[in-house]
Length: 180
Length: 378
View 1: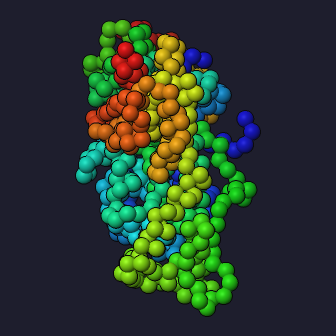
View 2 (view 1 turned 120 degrees about the horizontal axis):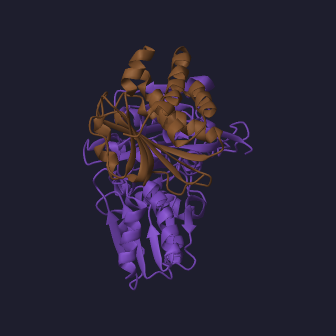
View 3 (view 1 turned 135 degrees about the horizontal axis):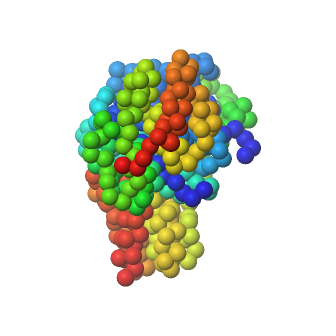
């Protein structure tokens, strides 16, 4: 595996750090060496929040993202600070409703109604997991089974079924999408 | 992989390692970006019959830790910039009274309340000189989650062995980083216990000189007379301003780390053997420097990295050796120029020392180090 850099960006409280924790654990289950970093603003909710996962086969000299291969943009506030880090041809999944101006240009952009899909599943809070599933499905970052196992380890038991349903919905959406 | 591997957040690694090292008392006051240490300690300590107290403030926290340590218990507190400032008074007390304790500073942007959630490395000089008066202190600066784990254990060992406060300092990035760590089986871990006073209780002097300059401590309940004060004291522990006694005791106190420096100093050299351009840095900036060294070597620039793990006392001889063949030394740091002062002090006259500084709350990235070093090499 080439060094792969993934960012989950948006507004504090959207479950971006949780998403990255799940991916970190899933990649580790697949035998990868991973590092996860995070940043947020000093507000209890809202403000720019991100969590990055960098993974490869070897020891990671530098654990932070320098050239993103993947970006899940859950809110407009996550776009500006991430734009300059995007690698040419990076895969970007952006929530249609909350990210009206996603990064464009040299990226493979997928605009998708993650929030609406989550509401349809019964809880807006799983929009992040749908996005995680969709991005991993589109980009082949890691397998669905590893992600499901990681979700079991990282999320509360009461929400396990809903989260797994959201992951399925994310992977299922892959075929339905067309590049914007 | 053999062993017990866990996917740990830096601050959690610190808490787990403290418990593994035998820490059984934590007093703290939550502050970003260190709060996860207190949070985890509040969960872990009750499992091992330890005590967790959220105190009224940072000063009270270190005071409680000093009290616990005098009671014979390994103790720790954790904080960040503004709280670290508040702890300086009691840090000096622990230095003078020779009370083992571990103080964690997960550093963020300053001065004052600064940038609570952003990283900085601007407490480098404060960690050494923050408390008034000449005083011994050890400062350790890990650059990975695994190293936070291992160095937390070493912080307790050094503190107990040399009766000195040990500051464990890492930036917000490292504190909030998640990496895979091999954790120790606490039952198999060999940790250092404090040198307790033996022998007759009559005539016991709590601050008597010894060969290693570390006086054995009276174990609470043993019946040995001990007096603890922040006033300059004689071997008896009682205050004095007698010049001869003061000079003798202060010189012993200040010689402690120098006498034992071989055990205290720790550093890492990466490609320093033939390095013409040496990078000296700590924490997340050192992780950036690792990548930069690889990039520069590929470009034919003989770059190397000298990384003090024990920041204070600074590993002077090791640095001088690493810098022996260097044309220039670059010191990248997330402050306006602090570590660079020490390097300028230690560097030879024919070696150019340059800084690379960032104070905007963003970490220094490998490309910035590469660019600056290429500029120096031109």
